[in-house]
Amino acid sequence: MSPDMDDKNISPKRTFLFSLFLTILIGECCLASTIGIASGQATADGRPLLWINLDRPDDRVSAAYFQGARFHFLGIIPSNDTTTVWMGVNTAGLALVSVVSAGLEGDSTGQSGQFLKTALALCADVQEFQNLLDITNDRRRKVKAHFGCFDKRGRAALFEVGNSTYTFFDVDDPIENSDHFLIRSDFSITGVGSREEGVWRYHRAKKLFQHAIMGRMLDYKYLLQHVARDLANEEVDPDPWLRSGNLVPPAAEFLDTENSLNSYNTAACCVFQGVRENEDELLTTLWIILGNPVAGVAVPLWCRTGEIPKQLVSTEVGIFKMAGENKDKLYKKVGSGRQLKLKAHTGKKSWSRNALLHKENDIFDMVDQKMLVWRRTAPSLKELVVMQQKAIDRILAVPGRRE
Image (cartoon, rainbow, N blue to C red; front, side, top):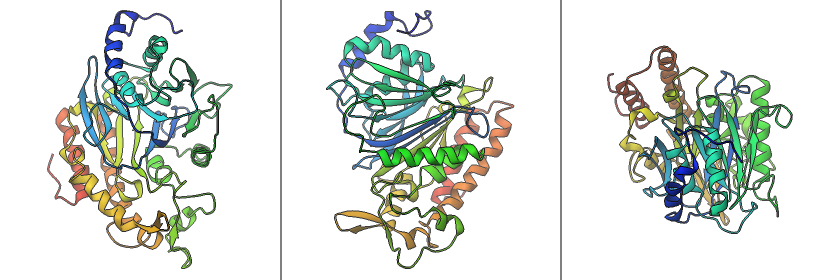
């Protein structure tokens, strides 16, 4: 049990509020996803990173802004269903993601997204999230999931959470985790039963993180462009072809991505970049690719804006619509599934890898230049809103607005 906390933090006095939240929760579909978290000791710039590739058959995903009981927050939700939040960041600088894992303790599931929403509304940091788990252990949460998180102090952790128990993993544990990062997929380290589901993605993501850390190049860009969009499967790794800029061998027309980090069913990707000690927690950045990562472009979002650009809210227009159209051009039905058309992916059309990454790199440059200034002098709300919109305009080829 975690130590007691003062009146400003979560305490047993708030159990009524927790109980209220937890009794109105509704079910959610089972998700197949992969998450990774790295502390500032592993990253190139000393800021923590949190990544998730969200896989689900229904790929309608959108962003939403919530005014919570204690903190406001940005969340990624299933279409327009605001009862469930799969990942998000709040105004205290707490970033949080979840992935369902059937092998954990208990027999009740379906509420990890609602639990995460509650946590973002009420918890300021990793310790308070752990206190929330302590308080709800005896209430039999309908949760069987992994939760990855970091806070404004740079603390990073992963929790394997069952109905009435949980296991805490410190990303910076000097004995158990000297690499300062952790990966999880559909199976649990502490769970029971088969570990076949997600094992390939787990080891692939771990290998990519290790490679980046050894080269001191683990940053948000690497996660978005090399991990989230990774297409390797058990038999072939097309990455060397893609890096060389050459077309794939003529015989390699299609690529099976069923077990890839970027699979056909990947509906969204998020990368959260935290802050260093003494930096403003409101500069914690949520980078989101709505839609299949190889078909989309990352957009930066900040809690301080208090809003979500309209092009990220609807699944019928804007960013999601563009990514959906690109996905239709990049994948083809082969047998009982869908495979990536490699020549379309490496071609010269607007939906090709190079065209999409060109737009994304322009956005990275814009944001990086501004962040150098904002880390010295806090940006105004207007500056952040303008930057969000400029990124979207760049993606959708709308003439840029002046600041």
